[in-house]
Image (cartoon, rainbow, N blue to C red; front, side, top):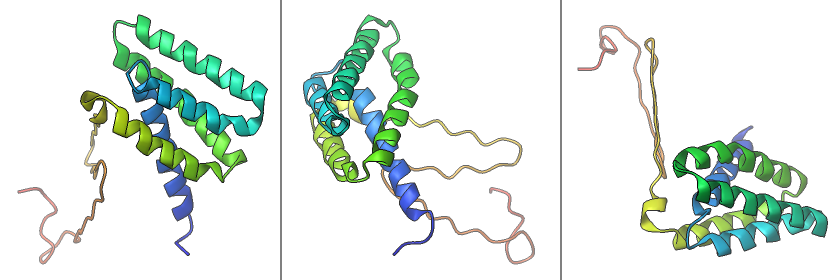
Length: 154
């Protein structure tokens, strides 16, 4: 079994991937697949909750379609879907596999420009940023000193 917190991190990553994929699919040609898949996931909570989620999805798509700045609206909607998916997976952990399959299905259908994600990273006041999308970051650092160097970039 993995280290403590490892499962939580993988779940957080799944939720983030799910939220960004769903919001990214809104108002695109792949929306019908995304909407149907999300509705199926939330069916676990019963027909009333599934209908409520479908209405919420439809309202969010309408917001994007009316917006002048669709990416700003997508970014504003993302936290809502992160919370919805987190709540669903807390209640129904078995939905994680279905969500992962849905993410793959939606991403395969997204337009090419929707498959690329933007990541902004800022390091201030002597901070460091190690960032990656779709892979791993492995960092080896040595302490400042005679053998480790000054720690400054060259």
